[in-house]
Length: 282
Image (cartoon, rainbow, N blue to C red; front, side, top):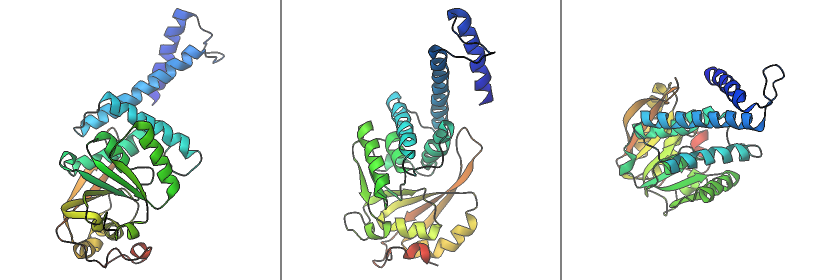
């Protein structure tokens, strides 16, 4: 960001020579026009970051989608002052570590071939809300056990005018037994922090036969995959691929686990609330 800082100083100095503002380097005073100039430059750089980052993933964002994502960012920061939604509060990092990171799901699966999407343990809407904005044809269900997060997400839905998206207040273990949701989704995507065995028990019961469960994970996934392979098989899944993904416009690397649903999940699963996390399947 240093290049931007020095460019702003140069730019403001040039501008002030023209309109004779109160700006000066000695007393650091700014006019409202100067401040607006800084904000405008910052906004343009953030938009460039978002647009170019999406292009790296072969995603072209419309002006409407860009504005929706920026409104999402604005409301995320506002609500985060009162409820714990994210530890990331830097504008640039929200775009890279949240928005662009969520878009890397597109590296694992052609989302244009997906109709229904479930995000289990969605939190502040990652990745489900971002994917809905970027791929508006999706019918999206956002599930979370904390209602205050869902209230925030409903505000986002209303403010952005999104359709074919719902928020469901439930634990995954309970929702996975509900016939309205069990094995009804083409894709279940998750960025939740849990081991693969636990995430699979939360997610695979929702996926249709021939559908997919996608988990965004860290770099050190090999041992985790090895320890969860039997659980995934028991739940009706098969590990199809592990994809290396670099978050665009960053040096951040992670893995994406792609699990295909090849047979129905036994009715025993998911187990009762709390059991999948306390005693992951072996």
